[in-house]
Image (spheres, helix red, strand yellow):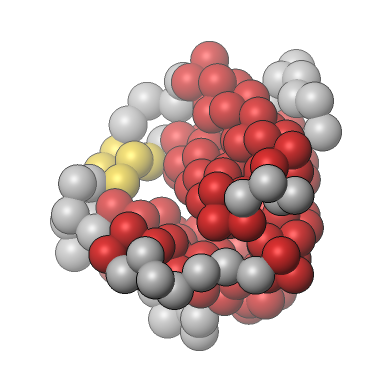
Amino acid sequence: MKSNDSIEKLGRQNLIKKCPIDYRAIANLIRRAKTDIDTAKRNVKIDDDCSFNYAYNAMLHTGIALMFSEGYRPEIRSKHLTIIRFVNALLGDKFSVLINMYDYMRKKRHQFIYEPDIPCTSKEAEDVIKNAEEFFITIATIIRKKNPQQEFDL
């Protein structure tokens, strides 16, 4: 995903809205993301699709936490894509591989819901879990730098 978005552009498009920074909500999202990753790992041997979905949810929760830490929230319209676009605008091309994987996961998750005959392989599930972990650590580190008192189990 090429970074042609900016926070201002997303605001002009009414895709994001300013909100007060709530570190308790951010910490809850980070904890949920960590639980999602742990759940994805536990289920990879049982159900690849389930693991994929939990890894995606971890990235979604982490992305929302980043938005909240910047004082924004996504509007209802195109919420999942907006979160990816926001993360991309904030982190930029340096993280393009991770952001591209996140967007791929969003599209694949959509297929799971509406075209359930397109399965996920074990290798794919393991790869997305690794990406979710990397994304989680990257974002949690950024959030922690903004509020050093905030403790996260990384």
